[in-house]
Length: 163
Length: 338
Length: 103
Image 1: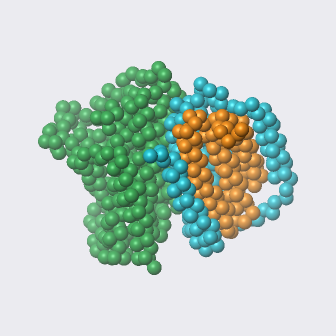
Image 2: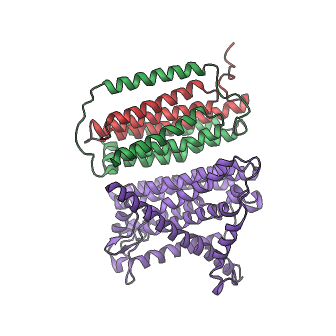
Image 3: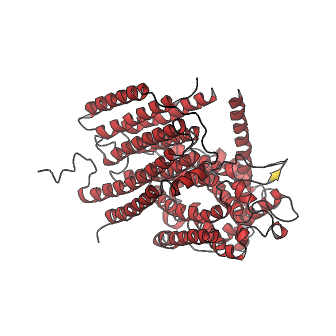
């Protein structure tokens, strides 16, 4: 019961702000709504027993990416962007495509007989993730850290004002 | 109905903790700040309300509660009103993982979660959003500049803060705050195993942990926007920075958030490096508060001693100084461990 | 009623659809990036849910989610830097007006 209640609340917290994100004409309000959406996803992660991922989710998404997005919106277009048209001509086609794709996804996902395995997650989530990162997934770990470095340098070079 | 009881318990704990924090952090914090600044500047500080000015903050709170709420005409009203609440909630939530010490047969901590420190730093990073939105929604150029400065400063200093935390985390091998304090038990006078004295590595551990402690305090000062890193609210340049347009209780909420975060940083520094509740003779909770208030005093001492940095100096210090140093420290601690 | 894998899959599919709609209907480059972030979040929910219900003993899903979050951070940083560069040169960040390369 409790789990279901928590799930429903978190799903609403995730999805309602997401609707605001994609429809609101005020860009700052849209970017602001990203934060409750990210926090809702964090709650879902906690419900799924992925505490470490949840912590990283708040730190990176809500604490860094949302701030960056707000920053850029405030620096460009002079803020809200209410004065100009925010949607393009293909809005209805976009809605149709997204709707069809979502419906298709839901049908396929619900129709597939997933092999549910009963079992419990490792007790210490952080430790298990750390061990997995440095044993089985060490290549992915190294490559993603390299990508992080490259994108850091790349972002600096691109965003820097030409002298 | 188990979960219902759990939720009630959580709400009750939250109310108790938040009331406690509002009293300790805001009331005592503001009073201590004014008294200490008076002492450093050879003045008396507040003296008239109550004995020795003890009730000055209460009087200020009553005054702030009576003030009118002004929302500027072209401000984004919804964002303007939400922003201070976001700051306060995030700052107070960070207290959830601070262990106060053993009492009544258990450790006084709201929740000892296994990602404790990650949670703390995540909450610290949420404060930025409230500040940025508050600065933007005021529709005031000084507030906007303050918000921008706060955002870039706090994002830059989160990284050294996390890297400084890595040293005790690696020494204790856990992210849980209670686990970290328990790893510092024992030794001479129950002090010998504090991480600032090297923990179980004895003298070899002193070098990384002392540097990490200094780094943590620097980054924490910057993260809480205190002098010498108070550029987001630099009076002489930006009026009052991001809360220029705020009046009455919402202004007080920003202040409360700031003090709650500063106190939380001091508490966390004492947990991470100074052994939390461990110490000779006195009970654990007393030791915890002694350490916390000593660090708070240190922060205030710094505040009234050093001049403000320039913005380029501030960012250079983080990206060219503290971040590489932090990576070196992680490397050094790793070398100690193997 | 227990919360099962399907619940999470439906939520993530809806979130993915919303993100896609945002990408297809917005003119502002930053708004498009926000749509992409929503889609990446949907993916993360999916991966972690599969980890919980299909292979609970391993934590591979968590690792995938962490890698995706890292790459999302990279993508946001580079994308927003590009937006800033475009704004500085063309004074617009509406993607249908950035048509210098179109003859």
